[in-house]
Length: 122
Image (cartoon, rainbow, N blue to C red; front, side, top):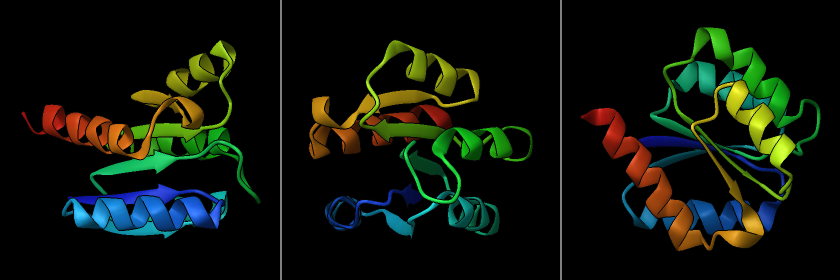
């Protein structure tokens, strides 16, 4: 299963990337919104794990840009933004789940991603 992690915090990218690779995932990374759109379009992953606060183009803009063309790729938002309004907006733009970084340990993030991929393959 191929996932794209879109995150600008390098330490978190390293931890997430290593964990997902150990769990058997093929992982690609984008550290800003512009690269995210390019990587997602070129690789057509099974799932995208997307931060909202990104350089060059924020996660909401990435979701909006992908909404029409790649709506079949599930996007799980993993962000520091914990407001209900942010979650509502992300889901309106097509996110299938919204996880707040401080409330979801890495193992739980992996399980949520796995759950979305399994439900998609049924």
